[in-house]
Amino acid sequence: MIQENTATKIQYCLYARKSSESDERQAMSIDSQIKEMLELAKKDSLEVKEVREESHSAKASFGRPVFNEMIADIEKGIFTGILTWAPDRLSRNAGDLGRLVDLMDQNKLLQIKTYSQVFSNNPNEKFLLMILCSQAKLENDQKGLNVKRGLRAKCEMGWRPGVAPLGYVNIMENNRIEWIDIDKERAPIVTQMFHRVANRGHSGRTIKKWLDTIGFTTKNNKRLSLGRIYATLKNPFYYGQYQFNGVWYTGKHQPLTTKEIFDKAQKQLLVPPREWHKNIFPFKSVCRCGSCGGSVTAEERYKKLKYNGYSKHIYYHCSRAIDYDCEEPYITESDLIKQLVANIDHIKINENLLSKSIKAEIERFHALKTQVLQQEFIDGNLHDIHDDFSDSKVKLLSPDIAKSYLLHILKAGTSEERQRILSVIQTKFILHNRELRIV
Image (cartoon, helix red, strand yellow):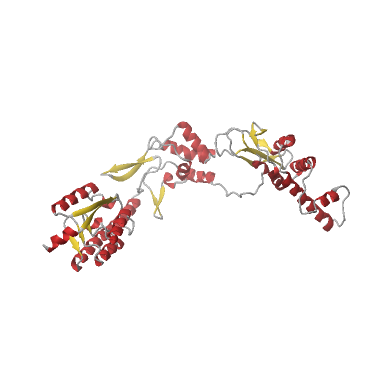
């Protein structure tokens, strides 16, 4: 009679949990748990203040948001009891079990009631609760070991666990993956991918363009991404080997390519590391692509001369960052410079920055003539110009001198000098059909 009076004063939180993991597939569904426990509460006249549910594994401590909120509410005194289907719904780990027992020790959690048992704040019942939850943890640990042992045995038999790679299909028996077979629709295409890379030197992007052209899709009816293409081409599974948990195994599946073709493809895919900013292409910042609006980049090309030696040419073109298939043609750096020179009268210049640049040049040359050439001055107007720039305030040059200096750097300057001087140009250009056009 005393227990009944105590039970009526307890405010319960009905907690239902179901994990989607394989070790709890046989557990009762959340809806069934709630239905059964509400009927039990009605039968025993228990006050269920709130029902809370979540789909989450109880293996790890502090990993369930709803459970953590329930514990916090018990600490605040909102609930004084828990109603749940079985002890393993509350905990399968030592951390969460310790929190429950600690709340009982503090008299904040008066009772945990399951479908078949009651656990109150007394030594025997708390000890039984700890045994049952510890048993659930032991089952989890043992199942984890059994799963790993089973996967290792399957690998040793020659069958790779998990979802079959592109070009293969999983053969299921009793809702389990038993072995891997050829995907007759996609396997020939995967084989061609390796041959195209190994024998024709195709890149990943070229392969993607080809696959999109022939309408190739995955089993989910999606086009193959560039990352998935590279992952496929680098997967040794396709010549009969695979790695699982750091150990290599020989598969019993039918290979889609040979080791020789696979290794040859890897050499073709090997890209040497780039040395960023090794080459300076100053005119990239001057214009954008007139076809797609993307940025402009450049590259060096070498042509073998008739009588030994090589000639170097620099070509500017669309970076294809926006449109990979952009057909904007290339233009040589020399042609680009000629068109800039032709537009010199229409170019807007930051005269202040240009004057500073000229002052720096004059001071550098002045130091050269006094420290190296050992002479007081050089014939001409250089000495007078240097005097004009000798004060702290930079004076603006006449438009003619400014443009003459700009023309000089464009025609005869180094890449570094051109990059520095192009920062004073405020006019923006687009490059379209090898022609520079002012925006």
